[in-house]
Length: 214
Image (cartoon, rainbow, N blue to C red):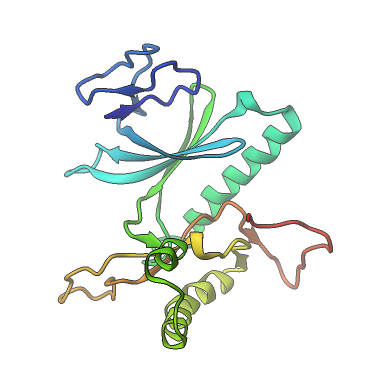
């Protein structure tokens, strides 16, 4: 199934064989390489899709974030666009770290803004708690031991995440990687840098500033 990225499309779900949307006629391939296959989430000004990057061989999964400017007032749009651009810049600045999703692309097409990043397979900590119950003391210490290095990594670059919560921490599934130089098996990945901020020097947040998400 291929999902049309036109927010006004009356019938966004399409067969895999389609090149043009059967509901609105739009090209189903974003930038001639990305195919959205599932709507994963929708907020006030942004939609998130699971997608396929056909530019890679073999094709790989990725995440597409789409900013929806027509739904926003001018001031809100400018703020949303600024946050979108900020997330792209920060992901690019942080580079390739095994516990941070890589930025694959950032562009504008048909008046919509897009951010494409690495897909992280696995379950977030909120899902794990629902499935397995609350963590015991030993598991919490292990969680901190796994997570603190990536937090230190971003703080060393004067970046604060500002929205660390169970839903934004994904544990990769255990992988059989005996010859890998990186400990990828079951590691924690910190996602969603939309609220992140660069702090220069001893910069602080003003009292009353609302950050993060519930």
